[in-house]
Amino acid sequence: MNARGADDTRSRLYGRRKGHALSLRQQRLLDDLLPRIAIDIAAAATQPLNALFPHAPDMLVLEIGFGSGEHLAAGAEAHPDRGFIGAEAYVNGLAAMLAEIDDRDLANVRLFDGDGAKLLQWLPAASLDRVDLLYLDPWPKRRHWKRRFVCGETVTAVHRVLKPGGELRFASDWSDYVTWTLMHVSAHAGFAWSAAEADDWRRAWSGWPGTRYEAKAIREGRRPTYLSFRRRPTYLSFRRRPD
Image 1: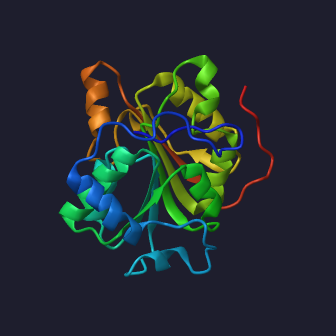
Image 2: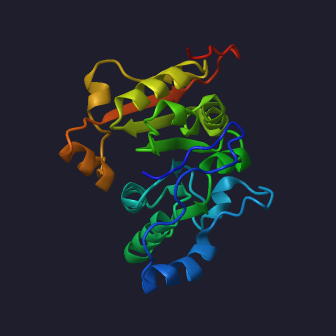
């Protein structure tokens, strides 16, 4: 999916902001629907986060870099009692997600048009039950690794916004990025890797709908990996640095 990495200040996006031309319907949805469900981080968060939704859900899920939105939309449709937040900087991805929201009549989704790292800074502490990082841009060349979304700063930011016991989920078909993520998340004492056996990272999560990118990766012979981490209820502030 299409979240873009940022530099050390986590404030500058890399990669394309827009791809192919939008259809008339997509442009209409960007003009009309997006403003109604967009999260404005310029405004201070003065209310509980679930006040963003008409049904004030108890469980809130964030997906950063939702690509075409099929996973986010499937989750929102399957769990109308929950609130789903999606962050995506790629305009075509936003347009595709808006079409999913419109087609499925989803009232439990809110979107952020921009860098997910900035949204993490704005979100209240201990406000989310789950954060999903699925098929982010792997930036495979070594000189571009600093652009990867997963880094010490973003792992700390995710830890801050998760409730105690909350879950961080990561999926990728790039083994190097999987190793990178394991190193960075394991370096934070506030997370525990949930895997007990190999199948725990080889099998997708229950109810997993798959994504277009995942299907493409499998066709091309790349095997996905699925990582789950839990935010520890309490932890020592000591943090190891990955090598």
